Length: 412
Image (cartoon, rainbow, N blue to C red; front, side, top):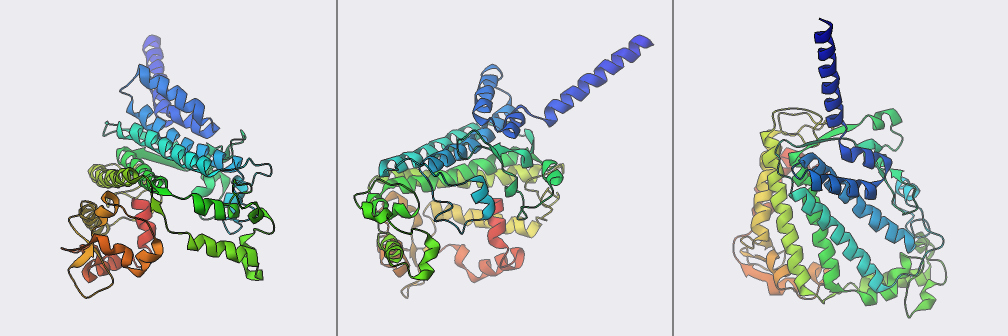
């Protein structure tokens, strides 16, 4: 009897230990301590020994994603991003976790390109890891309010808890207990965002921006390598425009004037398109997994039968409308449907969005606003339903006029 009781106790203890290990995955301890580099190395070694452990692979992808912003923040801090002297309108919570470096290193145009390149490479590394997750039942429960990130490279990781709520004074105990049970659909959700960011870094790297850097980077960084050293003399606080700061006003005019970019590396535009297509793939894949779920366990994005940790209801109508939007976006990326053009009289004339990336010309936002930059890409053909009055009315009725973009950002 005693032996049976002891055996039962042992089995119960082992079950509890197994449950605790599942509730606290390997990645979480490193995320909570803010030791992301150590975590990435540990998980890579773990996966080398146990390559089928998709929970660990998911955790590695999450750590690599946060490392992306550690590396970016460290570089921006090193070169004196002016979060206090120039960018005073950014939220106070962000300025507190990302102070301005008072002893920065000089930043050159090539160094800025290197920073963007590293950001892209880091994102691609995370996306590659996430895309290798195959287990449809993978779960990664995380106390997201306790995650720490070293944004300045000073060995002082800060809580990412301010991202959880618009209220920075949310109760600490509530934040600490905030757990999200990330699942297979969320793997695609995060991979999709990695591709979205990669696409626009490729666009930034595709164009030649040395002149705009040399003429206006002093507005955003404390010390920049420029032949116009006089630009760094005087008050560079963007808020001083209201006091008719003539040099600053002229700098802002120059910044706007120089928004005409030569595409120096057109192959990067094609790479950007590929990332957008991958983003589209993940955006559809995630909903395939979300719709197959039958549980309701602290979901990040719920299906219409679930509640979700954000307590935001996703209706059948919302999902159907969103999937229709994804279908139309895919047709636009493939060049099978055109984006409506606002000038002229031809109802069947539109912009072939795909050709902007496959046959790039100079990028000039002001000429796009005027319309003449669209001329090489104008075609006759079917216009996307995204612009139809029926679709716009459906979006408004389903999501609400002011709610759609917030939901779209959440849905990916």
